[in-house]
Image (tube, rainbow, N blue to C red; front, side):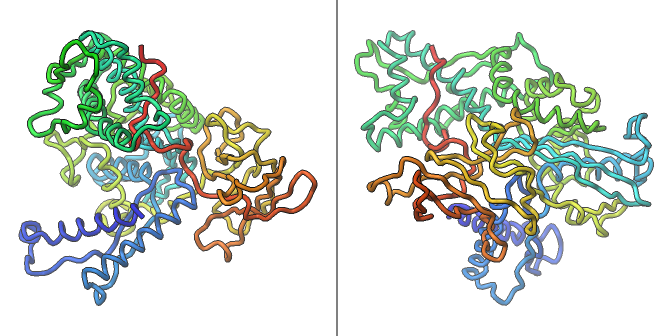
Length: 542
C-alpha cells in the first residue's frame, strides 16, 4: 500500500531528524540517542470510521516494519494517538496563545474578554474552518472555565470534499488552458481548440499508453506549477482588488533547472501543420483578480455557505481560518460575505501573531503557513493536561466522531430523501440497533452519507456497489433487490460496518450474495483524480 510506504518514509525522516548531529548538539547531551515516545496523527474532521480504521492499521504496519528493518526490536515502540482532528488542533493553537501570551495564564480574564456581551462570560464558542488540499473541515467547540482549566465540548463537526485541489483545477481550466489556446491561435495554429481537447480533455478511445503518460506529466510539470503560481501571487495581497492583474511569465514560473522535460512539451506543442515553430519560452499571459475571484467563488461557494450557516446557527464568538487556501483574499471575502460571525471576529491564522513559543513562526512573529497549526496544535493537545505552564485543557474529552447519520444513494453530490437507506444512525455506537435496508440495485450504485436531514446538504461518498466481473459474462437478472445489514462488531475487525446480506431477483428467488461487490469508495468520481490523469473539463474553453 502506498499509504504504508508513506508512513514508513515519514517515520524514517522523523527519526533521522531528531538524531541529526547538529540537532543533538544544539539541544544538549549530544552523545545520547533520541527515540520516539509518542506519535500523534491528526485527521480530517469528517473522516469516516472505516477510513480511520484503515489509517490506524497502516500506521501500525509501518511502525512494525520500521522497527524490524532498523533493528529496534529491543526498543519500546512509541504510543500512537489518533484522537484529534486538524480543525481542533487549530483551535488549540489559538486558545493556548491567547491565554498564555495575551492574558499571562489568566483563563478567567480571557473568557470574560473574549465572550460577547450577550453570553454569560463563562462560556466561549469557537468555530475553526480548515481548508486543505482535499477537504474543507469545520469544528465548533464550546469552552467553559473550570477553575484554572478549560473544559471543551464539541458541538458540531462537518467536512466536505471540496478544497484547494478543486480550486487549482478550476484555475487551470478557466485561466491556464485558455491562455494556451490564445497562445496557439496567435501563432496561426489551425484548430487549436480541437488540438487542446485531444491533448488535455477526456482520454480518447484507442489512446496510446505513452500519450496517457505524457498527458499526466504535462499536467504535473506545466499546468499545476502555472496554476500554483497564479494562486501564490493572489495570496500575497491582503485585500481583494478587482483591478489587480496577475502576470504569468514562463521564465519566472520555471526558473533555471526547473523547466519541464522536452518530451513533455513536445506532447502539447509538436503541432503538425503549424506555420511556424512554437517557442514556449515567450509564453506569458495575465489573469484579472475579478475573474480569479469568480473562479474561486464558483468552486467553493456552495460548500462555504453550508459551513457558514452552521457557524451562524451555533452563534460562535470566533471563526478561525486555517489551511493554505485561507490565505486567498477572494476566499476570505466570500466567508465574510456569508456573515457567520462579525468581520472583526474572523481570525486568519496565517497572519495571527504568536509568541516565541511557536516553533514555526516567521520573522514577524506570525504563523505564516497556517497548515503548521495542525502539527503544533496536536502537540498542545497532547501536552495540555498537566505538562504546560499556565495552561490546562481537558483534551481527553475531545474525540473523533462520525458525521454519517443519513446513508443512501448519492447522485450529483446530494442524497434525495427518497433514496435514504439508513436514517439518524450513529456509526460510533456498536450496540445501536439498525434495521436492514433493501433497495433495487441498478449497478453501479454509489452510497454516500450526509449529517443533516436536509436534501440540500452536500453528501460524501462512502461505498460503491457493482456486479463482480466474474458474473458479467453470465445472465444478469432484470431486477436485483439487495439487502444491506450492519455487521456485528465481533465479525468486523476492519470496521467495514455494512455488508450485503442477500440478493433477490424479480421472481423472489435468492441469488448468491457474492453476485454484488461492495467496497469502500470515498471519491465521488469513478475515474482517477485529475492530477493522476491530466484530464480536464474543457467545455467552457473557447
